Image (cartoon, rainbow, N blue to C red; front, side, top):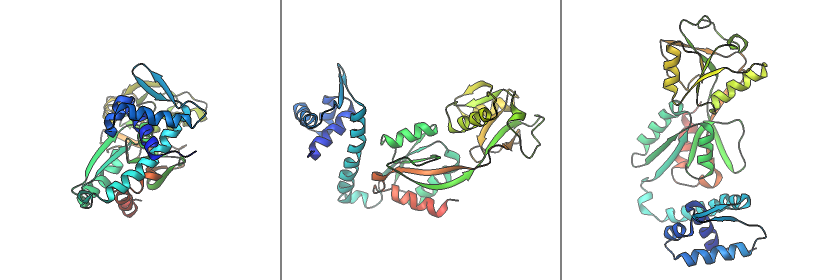
Length: 290
């Protein structure tokens, strides 16, 4: 099968924009031109690539795989175009960063901004899974979050290691212990920060390995609210040790069962490694990381 770059561009724009009209607008061509390219592409394969609806289109399962492959074509296309843009040679680029660990990575972002003052940083903060999806979907150029294994098509660089800790009110009877076990916390009400977050998922796993069901009593949208609830003695919480600002109103006590450190990585798609800004950011992290 000999796919053309025009077909790949058209398919990529169609999936990204969600409609033939918007895809044509993005590529600055007519809608019939987009339709013709998609028909040529579909004629080459034996499986449907699109689900068509009244207001737009969505990729099928194989169509989504093709879209992610098409992103590599677009990355190369953009890298070639950027090579001949003089305004980008003075480091006047934009870098989109998705992080679930802003406290850890903020000093790195600050140092990067000082080294490249003309660069524009857009920072997306969310759960580890949301950041991972942002990288996969090209909504972020680089991700900064904990991972346990590197997915196919991704590259990563270890930046920092830290451990799971329990957040306990100063008056909690276990607050002055050097470590605390999950069994000691079995019946404690948990104040969860985004129950689907990496940290809470990790804590839940440790509970269930001990045959204990975690008692999540409150769910908070912000880590600051979790800390405030703990200060008011409404329950306990969990954090990674360097993901939380110290406070004299609560204690951070290492969890005994969390023997292995959690590793925070820089993560990017292989095709994005050549993009200006990503390479410079990774090189700075290598110099400054643990």
